[in-house]
Length: 185
Length: 347
Image (cartoon, rainbow over all chains, first blue to last red; front, side):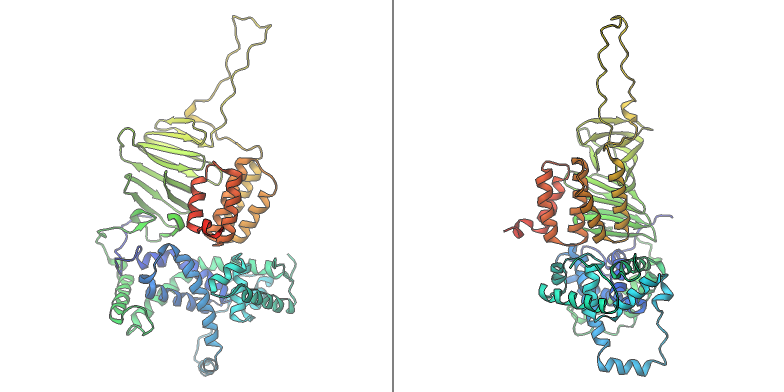
């Protein structure tokens, strides 16, 4: 592959240490990874979420005081947007709009279309999608990212006690659905 | 795995999702959507922190940049920086991250970086990670082609590797850092390799050297009293110092090597929680001090930089320093402790 010179910054700003283009390319995979998890494998929803995260980056990057903390910031923003997104979609008005637009909407590609999964993994994703948004995000952080409850609380701006309650509720729902789980509670 | 074990089934699904996140198709779709949104944005919404006119200008500039990128030819007057290194050239498919501590990792494509302070030029491909440290530039993993302009006497450039440092006075060489050990091949000029124990090996063009170096050869045994004193036994043959064979320094290299390979695989999949558990179990088994120090440093790095668990990282670093004070990672551990504010946490 021939090497060539990189292109100039698209949005130069004296306060920014890296162009948005470089930031986007450096973090897109990580943001997509988190988005796919928090959306329970729903590819379209994960794309929407990742898109919203990068719009936030563009809007707020000039105000980011410590660029070296961008990864942690992106992690928190992705989690918060995942929670607020599901809340919006579950509102009455959103459900009405969705019902009215159902015939015109293109079918959303299911996780099965994009992923080759064994049955157990497929069912686990479906179980994840069935959880309320906060419980889903917290469980992903705990089981997939290996975060402590203290760290999760810090990320989401919640108390450790409330995070513990969310974890307990989520695990209870999972077990009630017939799963066994060793979550090191 | 039993059919109904949720955490294991979810972990499997998570791995599949991670592969999907890495797919070009999904990333291209996201890029297209972002470019489309910015084209369609009539004005900046009121909730933005930026003033609407400036926000609109930034959005338009970004959209133009995204669409005109393939056509632009003029070089940037000040090339972008990656971890303090100037990005001189980049392939179209370059994917690179800059993590804490100015750790540069190339995930895909190729690039050429320049270290303005030393004049070192580095050509990097996929799966290379570098980090700038006080003592020099460290090759954390992967293969790098290096060219350095001739240096004044007494002012070598240093590239740090796992078991020593390469001091460069003006040359071209290829260096590979693997999970355990590595090697350097000199193409032109002269380099000295200084091992962690202070031994120095000088390489000439065409030479290759692998590290860790083997332990120094024991002295030749004295001749037995019955042998004729006029015909002493010859000293055992030693390989030329600049052509040291690849050593196995740990009496149980397969255990540590296997663990490090597994850690590398888990890291590549983003399974940092699992990687930390593997390291904890390995450390609990009782290893030689050098192996314990290496795995302990790896665990602390994951806790601090990938799992973002400052409390656990600080506690681990404290234990690491108790066991390995004066070890080869002291500088990095102290930097990490300072960045995490461990001293403040322990009060």
